[in-house]
Image (cartoon, rainbow, N blue to C red; front, side, top):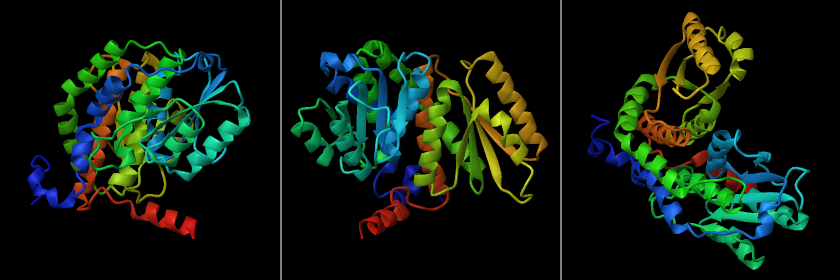
Length: 347
């Protein structure tokens, strides 16, 4: 019988050690801060007018976290690009951050050529592969990290590298003022609450198994709900959706009526750092969900700053997706339909 508190009871379902990668998420961030503390960019990289982050799937998760954490701090537009080509506005005054964990993602390699052709200020985040070769060949500065804290080698489980790597790049460009020692304190604050994240993940996984989770967050934690959705899709092999407050209050609530036999369960990501207005909206949204006879659960990080709460929530979400996979009796590592699609695309 599977006991989520005893990993020996489900070790056979985790041959690639996904649980260990999930547990090391915060250590990935510490590693990047240490390994690239002296990372620099040319002076002209600070003279840009906008930022484009180009990444797909797991390699784009860090950008979602950073965008929502710092959209009220960055003075320049920050655009997350999930396509082969860059947006039309990208030019020599654009900082382009190319992210591909493997370095072989075809959309990002195409974006790299597009960025170089347009004369953009180009940098990258990768472990190796063709992307590293393109950066080296064109004498572009980039972060090539060693994924030693991701034993499963799954890109979606390496978001600690891309979150902190993106922050390092933005700090090196002068576009974001960050104190590395303060960021490190935030990571350790999240680590101090890891046991709470795990116990919450186990409890909520048991609560939502058999349901389609609908994740609701707000403000600086909206990126976390995006990451959680992706990881539940890939690790748990389960449908999941995410919606932000206040946007969902203008449409989603009217969609709760039909079909009558739907099996949804809402996960509300709460925070004592949300604005008063959005906190009130979240509470009323719970009431609407309840009145539509739909069940919900709540999760709230315990740490005290925006970034530590975001990191704590991503840690919780990764554990949640893992334990949900185990409850479904499946290995969370393989992504057979993504692999099938890629093979068909090549043929």
